[in-house]
Image (cartoon, rainbow, N blue to C red):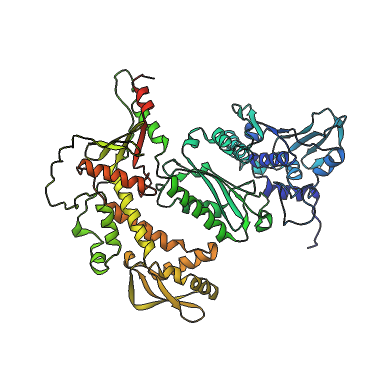
Length: 612
């Protein structure tokens, strides 16, 4: 069969299959062009979810007749000269306009500053008409109609107009966050007008415009640098989470990306702090030398590849965890909002709706069934002592379930003052589970089991960091056959993993001999663990799997070793718990990610009673 050159129209339609997947893809490419043209105002209008109409208007530099003619040709661009090592614009491939023009009806009108008149060019299903004069303001107007009319099979794969319109909205939101100085307006027959006023360099103001004002009250600022890679932005409190990952915005050198490496690192950063099935909220910017990141991985440019992915992953995880330890102990304002909503009358009957409190599981625990007893007896100074230290930290009696409960001691006449304490001074215990504390400007309600569970977990984790984790020797070493390059990588991390109680050594060029495994994990599949670690190191140059397993086990054990719901506490015990919470990183949520306390300001209470 003879080889022949494909027609230009068919080449563009093939390219459109990768570049233009749906109306939102076309919107993204055209908005990027407007931003690269220096626009300070961009208007987007749609109809039919973008399938019938997609119009982008900008006040950028515009194009003259010669540039307009070249702009609709494939691989014509003004954004790069020779190489791909120093890309500082959003677009650079020169594929978007010809790809869109090959599957839709496109009209482009543009005028440069100082030109007497504008110019217009039209493309219909890949057929380009000559450039002609047209009236136009400075900037460019791109109007795309009947998307995929030339490839009707593609229309069958599009979703409903509502879903496609939502996808376009999401693109505009990401661009609006990435470039706070640009004014964005989104309108059309299928939507209400959405407008983001220019916010200059104030990123947080623009983020609040997109994500809502409550984000400002529940975000922690991130500012970190490692080896000329800078991470900045805002990470939401662990208790300020969502049911999906749609509120995670990541940017690399100003480019909005949805890169699985970065999303994976973000999940790892919030491990053990966000409940299963919930997702953190974060808006983060990575800035680095363009030569250290490849943005030419895919025509859609949403994926990137870093020259040193381990460095970027470590920076992101480390910076977020440090910020959460520094400022993440406070409760999210959504807890107070939920409580306010719960106290709103539910009809004329005067009843109340909703619930503002989370209830922790009430499993039983006793020293006799504690999995830490053997470790405490055999390993002086080990993790059982860490658990016990956390358990005894606020002078609570030992949890011996067999002895009868004592009546609470009479409260002292002189109550402790709340001044200077973020969580205030304990005033009461409600339903033998919730501590009510008075602060300088409101009150705090603490779930005593959830709070103490977190304290015990942090004590155990600190013990794991400060000494080698106890291990158990295998009677017969487990031999794991692996490719030689995987063995090389594993040996580079052998010392670090030995601190976690996993001891292994090289057994020939293509095998690893496992001699000890962490005692906390009991009987495990050493072969599977080693292979999982090898895969993880190959991809990320880290070995987080084992640490995650141990953290998960510590979280489970601390849940069963904490003061139970239904336990009466003396006033001094309650206040000691509050003080330790203030001194413990991450005490704002339990190990399962639920909030440990809810804060209600005095102004909120006054509104409930109509006093403000």
